[in-house]
Image (cartoon, rainbow, N blue to C red; front, side, top):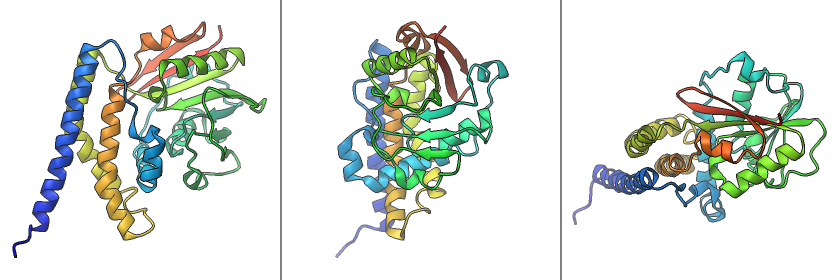
Length: 284
C-alpha cells in the first residue's frame, strides 16, 4: 500500500490555503479598485458562528494580533497627543486581545493612565492577564452603538484597529454618541494607502501575510497553547485565518475623506505613519 509522504501532505495543505487566499485577494483587490463601495463581507472574527466553531483559533488570532504589536515603536507628535486628556479614563471598544490597546496607550500617554477594555465578544481569559490597578475590563458584551451608563471619569473612547469592522451606519452612531456626550474619540487604524498602493497591498497579502503570521504564531499563540495538540492546530489554522481576515480588512478600511464625511460636526485631526492612521475626533 502506497502512502502519501508527510511532506507531500504539508505541501498540498499549504498549496490549498495559498490558492484560497490568492482567489480572495484577487476578488477583494478588484472590488476595491473598481467599486466606490466598501467590500461587503466582514472579517471571520466578526461572526458569531466563527467564534463558536473555532473558539481556540479566535483566541489565538487575537493573541497573535496583540503579540505582533508588542514591540512596535510608534510615536505621535506632542501637539497631537495634547488634544487628549490623559488624566481621564480611557474606554476602549472592540478591544480584541487587549494587549495592543494597552501597549499603544502606554506608549502614547504613559503607564499611569486608567483603561477599561470592552468588546462585543469579550475575551475575559486574555484580559484577566492584563488586569492591574489601572487596567480593568467589562465582562458583558458591549455594543459600540449603545455606550450608556458610562462612569463620569470616561472622557476618551478609543478604537484600536476596530473601526473598519463597523459598517458606516454603526460608525455614524458611535460618532453621534461622542458628540452628544462631549467626549473625545481616539482611533488607530491599519494604514489606508492611496488606491493603487492599497490595491497592490491586498494582492501581495497571500504571500507576505501567510509567511509573517506563521512566524508570529510560532512565537506566540502556538507555543502559548494549553497542550501540544492545540498548539499544532493553532499553527496550522491561525496564520491562514489571520491572513484571510487581513485581506478582507484591507479592502474595508475607511479613507480620511470617508471618516470626515461621517464625523457629523466633530472636528477631525489626522496623523499617519507607514503602519497606522491616527484620528482624533472631538467637538469644536
